Image (tube, rainbow, N blue to C red; front, side, top):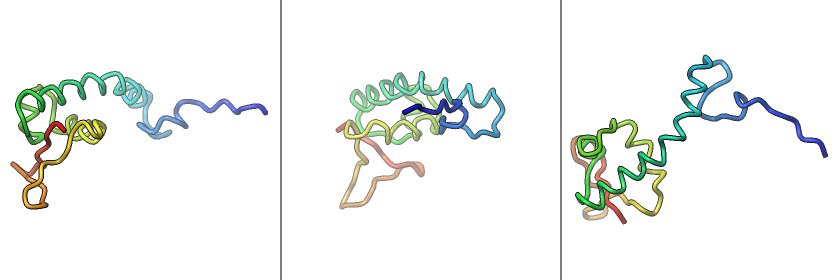
Length: 99
């Protein structure tokens, strides 16, 4: 069976077909940063204890948006801190902790 070669712009979910090439390249390059960002975030949680995305941004030098994108990707390595079954929130952000 022959496979159809599909251009990256059709398969890359980080950008749309109508996005400019610079946006497509930025989306592709973002995967290079993801692992180092996750490592920074996890190390900060392990060393400093539970923190919100805002608090983590001050510790690791990433933006709140970058941190918010990476926390769910850390999977079982992190968890949302709960108190009485309710998510703990500081400065409008959930508090995360290393699992």
